[in-house]
Image 1: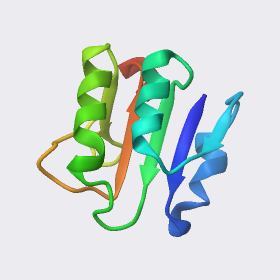
Image 2: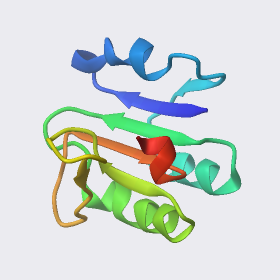
Image 3: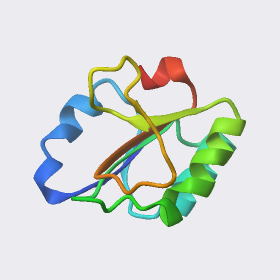
Length: 105
């Protein structure tokens, strides 16, 4: 189960990311997404909101809560396995948050 907040240029990513996923929702409310993940209603959420549109004030608290609950958040690009680690002091254009590192992978 995954939620997406996808900027129009990345709409083509949805079929690949949602392959074999039983529930896909399109949302643009990170507060609700993180709450749903903590309640077990979502397994992951992917934000692709354009250049620098995933600011820390939208995600830092939610990512921290997910990480404290055993989840994993990173930028799904770069050469590093598991993506580039999330840094709450930076704005990103993409962010993938999952209930576990295994699910993230």
